[in-house]
Image (tube, rainbow, N blue to C red; front, top):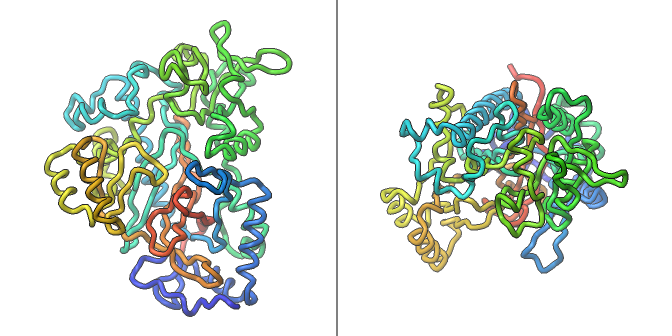
Length: 483
């Protein structure tokens, strides 16, 4: 059964590949023409081949609430998403601006707190954030960089306007899917990669390693970098092991590390070996039981003292979570104006802060029209999508908001852009978001081309998270500019 592209209808959504029924966008024309030339059922066969390849590569994630076993292959759709060179140039500039401001904010929060004292952000917003960690006050990370690796979630609305949905500065995940999706696409469709000028993505591990090595004290001839994982039961363990392997560095757990003679050391078969840089995929709370949670078995006792003395570097720096609190997010445009003296290139989604009485009343009176989110939840948890909720769910959320208004924000339900997606042998539109990855090296900020496109595979669903039934697509950033 052939895929009938001429029947595909973007309807009244912004479609990433089609401007109207039967009219591919200029950036997607070559791809659509090529896909129309495939034999009947060839696209479906390619998708099955790709899914088997990802299974063999071990590209999995874990779902803790699933009775079918915790390991799942991340569903992959074979029809890519395309971003033109012009669009990417704007996104890249906006992301660099945003990360620069967020980093200055973090440096300020754990230092002089000028933005608070100047009244641009209320003190209580920051001090009540669970990600604001008092033990980090006065810390001085190398080159004053706090957020070395960021994954920022972007969406487009019905008009095609880009918005920042949220910033992920603690331990952002997903880059391994970007790299493996591309590897599978190139082996499945080698011809199209020779036809189109698509920016490569496979050099991310070398960029990441360069970013990490940059953190080591300059006098060290051969610094040791490790990736610190919570272990095999973590939902992103595949990614931790993948990145360690790709960078050629050790993957370690807290029990493999120990503080001896004032330095962080790794246990090896040849004895202890000094560690200089830790790419930590462990949450702040679990890093050091002497400073944060005393019951943590995932971190290293004494690690923060070694860090404070500048004898080991951590990426990301502890304390960055205050900047991805969803209430603090509402003030990022203000940070850009305050620290950089510029207008934001990328807009936030309009946001209601439930701790403010006027906003809270509006939210409580309009729950069916809004998305309500908890300030520190991720993965699609702790969220109410008003338009698809029941009266009982809305009543329950209203009580949660009243009981703890600081913990909730609300945003209008954006009509997310769509991309053609292969569903049961036919092409149907499905909603997507985008998570580009940004590396901050102090002297420059690098934005990796493309990022993780997550797709809501359930018809009409706006929730793209893998834990909520979403999948992913390869994201192609084109190299050349259209006239």
